[in-house]
Image (cartoon, rainbow, N blue to C red):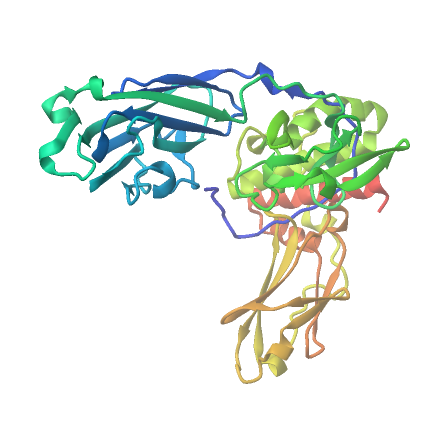
Length: 494
């Protein structure tokens, strides 16, 4: 869990494609192959191959006997750091030929106990090979060899179709060291999905390029291209997996649901994966999935893109290069302030672009800003204001209920620059105006309450207050916000 010091909160933004970088996709057939060995005291065994793109393995134990089965007990063991019992397993699916079987699917220690007993017995295995147990595992990680083992501690048969203990045959009884193979044979099947055959990536489906979005929210702009030939009937999607805490962006997006983007007369599919300032060092992985199979993947971070593109931007578009440097410095200041995602960037500024701190007076105070509104006619008492900076730039206003009889649902709507927002909370009410872009940090936002009272605030004015505090971390964060805003205004002519 990321640590959070909420003296100030942060929410920043930016967006516009800066520079393009063509990226070739690599086929998963080059991925490292490892094995899942399946063993059992039944004598059955096998081995399945899997790679980093494999999602599940299904292990099936089959049994054939010369008698009816009246009792059995066994336990399946596995490494819970590598495999996890899939949620689709049920008692009925694990032991499909043992009606009423008891299977403990709740254990998390790498064991799956199962047992069944019925004096009437079952002839499912008598003279016919049938499924003794079948388990589907989710594959949690690759790069290791692992083992799944079925240990049958009790297998009792009966030679009389009507049952009766006098006709019991102990086929397996581990504590008595009985394993009578004259009464049974066993086999095992292993199936890894997606199948582990080499996957050929058609060049007509690939990431055309990735750029950084900077006007609006910070993000990675992905452009995908698919020719029609060979893919008319295939379901194509992209699975995005990025930083911890970015759950709203970690999702699978269908190719058909992405927006069209026309470049040089060619239509591409575009998707923007957003990140917050403190996530710039964190990798984002995009998996291209065709008909349920991962056919290619690509991993990049905002910092990685910026490091690779900065020199080219300085040569071609210096104003945009300046925005990139200011953005990275801002990300460093946010990470330092909130002690989050401190992978390298947070403890340094760009070596060739050191952060310049500024005096608070550099930032002008707009007229009418930060004048406390009178909310008494609404049954509220003005409390405070803050600006979020860690999870995207936003303004929060707080008030406390002083007269609950006056504070009604009609009083909860607040107009911010023409758009309605609602108060939320219990005793302390708050309203949030978010998605403030980098080139809008110096804009003044007017909050108009239901009784006509107004309150004005800009994100940069709040940065001015941080700098005035004299706290070194606040000074760096406020300064980084200021220079980032200045660079964005220059680059995008806002």
